[in-house]
Length: 157
Image 1 (tube, helix red, strand yellow):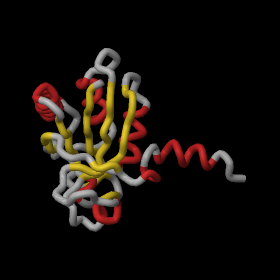
Image 2 (tube, rainbow, N blue to C red):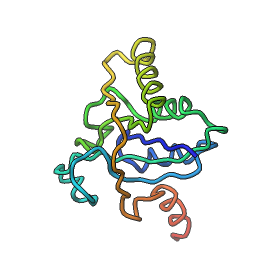
Image 3 (tube, rainbow, N blue to C red):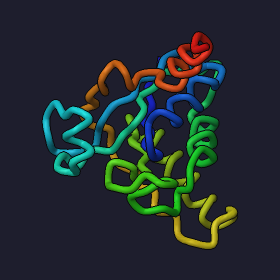
Image 4 (tube, one colour):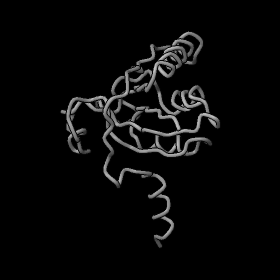
């Protein structure tokens, strides 16, 4: 299994998108890219940790390529936004590709360059490309949040 880490705004929707990709074996919502050890959601929201809300995924490279995962990433948010996605604002919502090896770094930089040159955006792409660092799992209620909400709402009368 390979690992990939992406930040593209609120991790709930990002995780949901990647969970639907054939070949993605597992996902986890969490925090990375900051300087504060063991952050919790309130720490990250207070904007004192430097972390981004991110999704760590494991994928089977024989079923899905890293380049295909990059396509999902680019299409699930607006990469021209700086420190925001939709109504969510703050550094924790920034767009970042956290690479785990040099092949991922190369693929990420190439895909960003192609999208900027031949893509649909009039503005510069703000997405950062950084080495993956310590990943801290978000609280349990954040994990598979959209699926949990869908299942719980079916039982409300």
